[in-house]
Length: 102
Image (cartoon, rainbow, N blue to C red; front, top):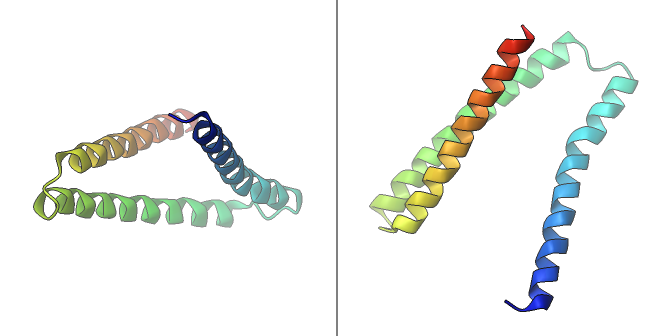
């Protein structure tokens, strides 16, 4: 691996991680300061996340099918399997955390 390429990748992924973190936390901190983080917002946010999670699950299943039926590529199949397992593990961890708070 070329060292130039390595540092470009490190900088790119670091900047991308910072953008994702700031785009998640910054708006929420502003909302808390102006008191818009009420029960209605929390309910709508949780409902939207549930729909988004189900949509992601459907997309993963479609990609899973396409990786086997159309592309006949086991590398893609195993990559999508890892994504699916990570998706389900994050749901399980989120469920445990949510249940421990109630």
